[in-house]
Length: 319
Image (tube, rainbow, N blue to C red):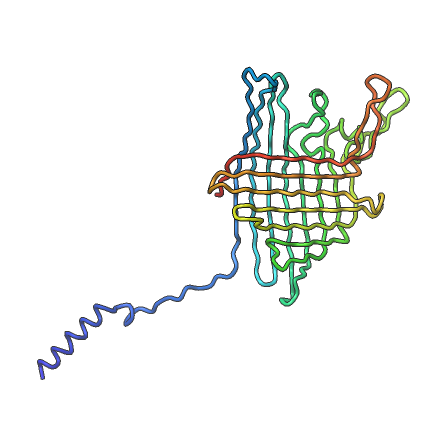
């Protein structure tokens, strides 16, 4: 009998030593904490350079650089999403025997949120806020004495509410807002007095004395439609398309302001990539001028289509 109990005790000790957790500890099940914020950051730098030495066809040495920083913080669950993004881009160009010139200057912040009470529908009740401006003075080169734009001159803000369609809202969305506030800021006194970017210009007397300063804020209410789409065009080639169309209800309704960006991203490896971008704008409040027969005088020539194209090779780092 003693041998029997001794054998049972030995077996029990071996069993407990081999599986202590299963006998005395309750294995914890990972707790589901629900949707979380997803944050991304990307720093990029593009460089292009051309050098000529005894080149019989002629040419001008030049170097261009573009630095960019993009960040985003997004949240989504079954019924609600909140997307936030910020972008900064600044570029310069230097050519032989010519002053340093700015090629790009953008500060942009976007925030949008949407609510979908019906899981069977792809439509969201949505609200959007967009703000953009620049950081450095802009000039009509080669004139570098008279700035034509500055920090917060202009600055643009769009704030509105409407409906947004997005079955895969991270990649494809269509937004329609029948009620959107557009605010144009011109916080520089000289540009405001000149009536730049559509604000009310200053009033002068016959002798050139200032009677009323120019307005520094122009507010409009209108209709806004936007569309954004991202896709992988081919392996390591991504394309992003963004279109925004706005028309004011009171001033020239039906005259549409357009902002269209189309960007191709060519990935070489984890760090090196090439970028091809196109940016087209039309804003009826941004007037152009032409020279008159009188030396030094100009007259308004109306709004024109603005277009910018960029091709660069550089590196990008996600962090």
